[in-house]
Image (cartoon, rainbow, N blue to C red; front, side, top):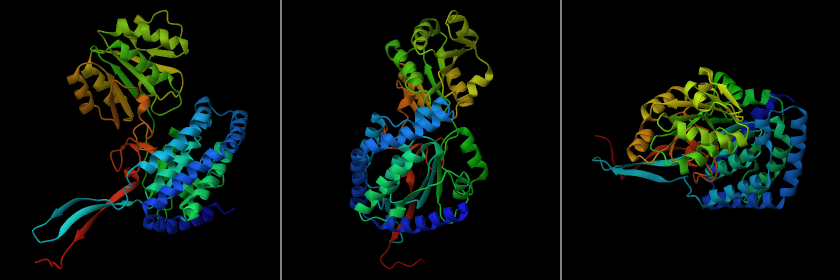
Length: 421
């Protein structure tokens, strides 16, 4: 197979399909989503079988635990895929919406219309659910998609691709509106990210190595985040009934996700009280605590304790490892976060309204929370139906990217025969 020609052929077909998708009405696009959801429910057993093939091969190949966790397609993951598609259907159709209409002294009316981006290339590792999330969001927003999943999920992605095609066909939409790259050759990625004549934007969802490579090589604009170094700060005005479960959930709910807390900051005044209680909870999960000098002294005797180094503040572990630092207060916490964060998600636990507002205003991250676990930084949890990715850039989208992030704006002008004087 000539990979370059194969990918260029996909690109040409996607470009043609994108025009048909932009013309399709919202009811037709919604019908495709409902048909895909029904097909996933119907063929859940087949999807599990395909996923078992992928899991067995991945274990045999020594895939790391964080990626194995992402690869697994549990019953709840299948249910979430279906719910996500049906939630997308209920969302307002962004395509064609006209806003900000203003009448000008010349007599013309000027506004902005929301339009699809065109062709979106999504590159992802493990996570077969991304195949459905990405397809659903691209269909709803009137785009065409080229999906390149990881080789470790090839069997499940092929099975899901058939169900997506079935839904598109049933709604009378072009099958080429969603294409799944059916090769594990890594050269396909290199081709996809250097086809600006066919692809309008690339969305990478994978490890730091993948995204670093794409940042180096891509000639197509990207919506991306490099890593997820997320923080929880427990303020001296925190309610411990909230602080303990938030800090435990943010770390231990799942280790291999980009919205998992990697560094815990605790105000000095409350550290001797809160850290031993949290350590008891973390010990149940055998979480290694890499503590700074003050935290290390407070936690002496904890069975999984290590001395933190500066490198720990810059590390996304994706594992049962947590960096802990005692800080003087809010100013020091904000300074630490803005210095070391990857600008993904941060949370403060406090009952001080002024402190909460300062944290929201001054922390420079895509999602900033008060009294909530960082694990909520997710398109589904934010009511976007699903997400095509998370962006910690400031252009063109930021945070979980849903329907609006997959569209752009163009100016539209309504006149009555006016001419410029």
